[in-house]
Length: 467
RNA sequence: GCUCCCUUCGUCUAGAGGCCUAGGACACGGCCCUCUCAAGGCUGUAACACGGGUUCGAAUCCCGUAGGGAGCGCCA
Image 1 (cartoon, chains in turn purple, orange):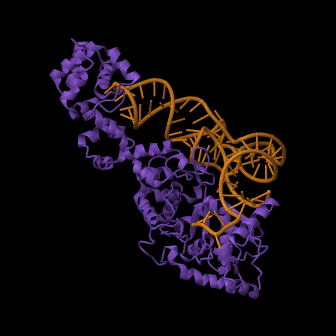
Image 2 (cartoon, helix red, strand yellow):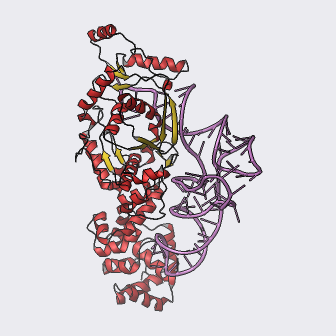
Image 3 (cartoon, helix red, strand yellow):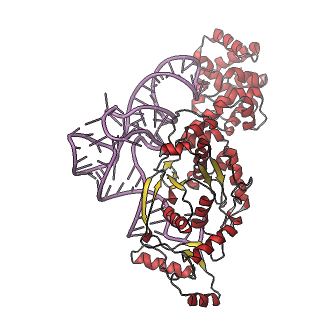
């Protein structure tokens, strides 16, 4: 089995509906699909599931594609680049679906349903109350053609329902969960075409995967129990079954499905905060997936180390502290030029070199910019203590030494050491706090070169003895 | 309610009956290095949800229980 998975080209797809921004969970699924296709030398297809005209927006479609591109997940077939199975927007595939609907109706595998939303709601309610699963009661399944004509004459609009075969066992081997077995008696007849003529998810999603040549459907666990419906549909149409794999969902720290209240959850939000694609991908690579590489991996090296047989079944918690770790790795690997672009504030090369090891996100650079050319915020408790412990005499000496050394930090500390007899932290910490206002931060030497001598002198003198 | 899925350190996970005194990574603590932070090196704390079986032997197999999740939509 795994030998087959490794060797033959795998065709995967990502099929988002353009009703919102790219969620991190979806991004991970897309990433796994991308990796699997790339690993096997197959193809990665992007298909837009926009049959719900009410909620679909072109803007979301473009955003989705922009975020995928930003992450570096390029597709081989898609709405913007075309391909052998075009079109790749379901809104444009109506003709194809219509032919299949006709086929199903002709073979009595689907039937028009005239039930209204209210009737269905009531029916479900009643079933729930009597302890039964809320399934379609089959009201319209056995209408005679005369009864149908009568309803049509009354101007009722019909949806199309799939006639679920009775007493069928549906079996398939999920590539993540293993063998699965469901009874068709647990499945009610479901809508495959809405009464406005558009196709419903179960239907177009399944037939498109089949006809587009997808060999591996990889999606979230929430679709596991939907799979038998889609299999029934494909079987009825005599269409090829793709393989199905369902990965555990991404959840928040509290174990609940990832949502807005967990903070940033969309790729866009992470991009805007300054997280790097390579950091996000290194993190997602290990969320619900175990690779054989321990540390950092360049994105280009990931497909070879993607192991579909090591995809997780349990829900994975998204923990930003782990993302931050990969972000640090990613920042450390950027060139100075890349960091300047990333910071986007026209900082000097010297400044960038000075602060780069103290940055996780671009916003972290702001306080250091202020240290160089702005005003210092009031000192914290620990910092006040450092200043007090050093004493005014120390800063008097420091200011004098600075008069001789100017911005040569080595020279400054050498003179100060001789004058005060201080060394180590006793020598450096007061200087650090006086010059930066903080007890932590990047090296002091380069800072003196970055800031104006006047500012440095002023900061040292401000703690000196007043005469 | 019914069907299905899931459960190993705080988090991501390794683990396919003896290789497990349960391994690694992140986070956290300590030590070293160091003016501080970061980086690096060493090191420490910390988990098989619970209860029954099967077996010479179970984190691994079976059955229950508990907890979490999904589906049962003219949403996808």
